[in-house]
Length: 373
Image (cartoon, rainbow, N blue to C red):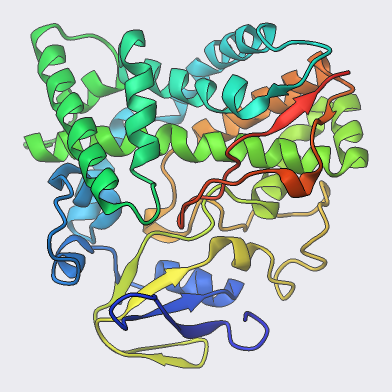
């Protein structure tokens, strides 16, 4: 599709609606930064999906807003979500990684996703936000259900469960303040401006879900890529200081978000030679753009020496992922630790037998069976 027409109309399979799918790198980067493509999608889809009851805190996240509201919200969040906070977390990330690896059996198969890729990001983001340990399994379940493709009732119910939980947690922190990111969000202000109650709940939900969901998938995808490319894996095992430089290539090669969240045209737009009418939904395939040979020569080749910093795995423009530094910190920690603990790690099943999650937006393994024997 990309080589024939990098922007094309595609049917949705329901109601005769047409979406526009962007698969070329240049066109994807342009679309992600084009202010004529709105992210304020809550009202847009309310008219097209009657009967849905998605909680407002999930429907109206910062991810689904345009300037000036998006600018205001992101500025307030950035005051609390700093690179310094991520740097301070690195020793904790390393300690949790070691503890989780201690529980992985040597000599028999284990599921890397269940043992490490799921719990590590959940534990880290819950610590960052101040979510009690006892509530982590519920948070993980609700988050996974938010991405249940083709199950709107499950998604809607999960949105109310996780928004209700965060509402209660915020109230508890107001009664007994601490020093978590959520506490800093409660106190965040820009002059006289501060977060409203619904905005606060919405941001908390977004950070909680986005803070671990995509990282879980990135960890599984990255390890799988290395298992399928043993020469690269062995090189990084022998020279772990090369891992930070290889992270962008691993993220480009198999991003954890395959398709960016919906945008729609506020007026007629011509993109990649295709005329898109006003009011049309637009989907940007980050995975396809990252494999565009016009931008990344030999894109199906995993090359740790490639300058892949311009990849779109974290998006582009004003909506670029705020949690990218945290995701990279977790990826680097795991990719340093796993080969050291398990130098002979290999897949426990043929690659064609691996199961992937059934979801449109994210790309991640349902399980990654590996063995160190």
